[in-house]
Amino acid sequence: MTNKETILTPEGVAKLEQELTNLKTVKRREVAERIKQALAFGDLSENSEYDEAKNEQAFVEGRIIALENMLKNAKVIDDEDINTDTVSVGATVKLLDIEFDEEIEYTIVGSAEANPSQNKISNESPLGEALIGKTVGSEVNVNAPDGVIKFKILEIRK
Image (cartoon, rainbow, N blue to C red; front, top):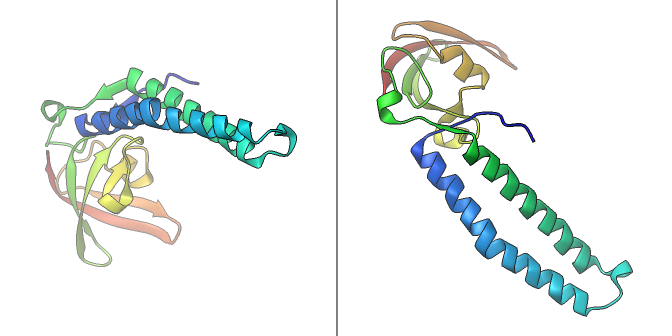
């Protein structure tokens, strides 16, 4: 596994730590109990419950390793690190969709925290990449499947 730097907000760190704790304390026990029950059924060659439990165990252990790596290589962005002169990770940006004359707000986060349904977009996404380093009043063009979308930056805040 690579040691790629993971950009996180304090909120993102807390969520990952909570998930990690849950996996280590609750999920591991649940999966171990499922394996124990499946072993009681006997013949492992035709025991689908055992196979499913072992697969879930592998997934849980893999996720634990991934979370530990993300947290170990985390770069936490605090409010003091956010510059409102230019768009950066952690900033909330109000945009104007020029074609549809609609305003929308996005918070720029690291890829581990991205959640478009909550208007949290990754700094690595096409829109996030286009916005990083830009200032209020700038216009950005974003390549999308339907063509180029044009936005104007109206506001940058913490």
